[in-house]
Length: 588
Figure 1 (tube, rainbow, N blue to C red):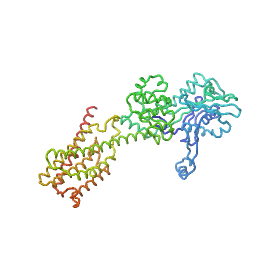
Figure 2 (cartoon, rainbow, N blue to C red):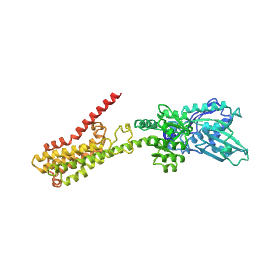
Figure 3 (cartoon, rainbow, N blue to C red):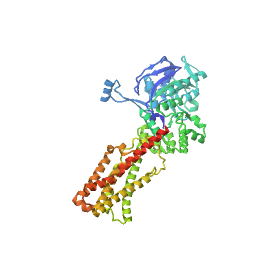
Figure 4 (cartoon, rainbow, N blue to C red):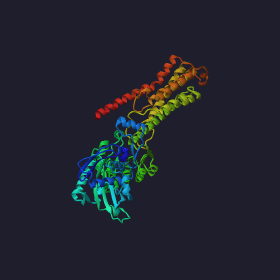
């Protein structure tokens, strides 16, 4: 998963600025451009001014103030928040820089009147920087650059000290990278800023001609807090046997801090960067991918290699992406997930699904939903096939034993349409097991009849068929074929109505699941039982269904035989659970 916006809130706020070793702490919340720069540095310094201008100019986001509303006025009066809600159109990182500059009084719209933009060298994931060029009132062109600190420092030859441009020494470079590391360790996303003046006659601008001999300005560290729901979702994934891999373009120390907070960082704490991946062969990357959970300073081509390495290792890979360059990796993954809010049309087209709220916890919720639906399909199949096997065995064994037919066609049709059809539909929308996300993932090619489903269907079908035939024999011993068929008919129906509760879980007994946790099922069973009683006691229905009225003794026989699945199933589950607990105790 991408870090920004999926695992984090994607609400950037610049918290610290470092200029010439002086640290400014910036107050304020959200996108409201109200805040203070607290620290020992001089905000009148040319370096501070140029950094704020670079933050405002090197930017394509738009800072907007919403209309005043009744709710906004209430917020302002009661909660001490502004009546106007400020918002950002565009990239949240650029939005945070706009807000920072506005807090210092540098509004891009005003600055742009004096220094109009003449060109832009857009951000590139390989260059890891963006440059804009503005023509100053003197006629010269100023280049403002922002990007990853290590990328910017490489291009800088000077810095400002005492208002003058002086050469950038090796010690200065070490100090800049040290400050970058300190900010990154605090889970701050760090950007560096640089500046350069070009000759007045410059008209053609390229990366090679502009992005060189830059003057270093400073660093800005912004906080993008993790989503509270993401921490819980990551923990749920671990319980469910799902490995969460975080991919980011941020500094490795930032990635480590965020991953630790989210619970993604492995015990070894290994992190792979894009440069390290470039040095690995496909085989080496495949081996490393099994151990590493955090990747930093990556470009889209690295994401594609990681997806392929994980797939070659036998993993089922789900990959999130939003940018155009993410499309190949998203398409390569077994399940490509595009961001609905920030995702491009190209990525959405390449994906298998679109995440409407860009929230990682929604992916986990979808996994839980998928597991639950699969479980309910198994319940549905198990119930209907067991009942059908029971019906077939009842007829087959009776014919094999030379007995009259226990059921007539109208009774079989009645059972299939009403008495087992309604509970089966209610079973299809049953509540999921509470521990469904504590099980390991199933193999994608696993049969729906795996894990003993076939023998469960066969065994329960035999129990239902044998029990129904036993009730039929009791009825025949009373000397009345109509009574025997009525006993067999009702025994088979109540077998099915009781057995549906056993099918609600493969891992928990009916006592653990609870009778009232699926009101649709309870209603369907009661409705089916009422219809069944009507077929026995309503006079004009008796000749239709070939039934006769039953007395208390008859019902005692029916209920004693048909309740066998509930008693047997509950005892079996309890014994199995105790055995499982004893095994776990011995392992510990």
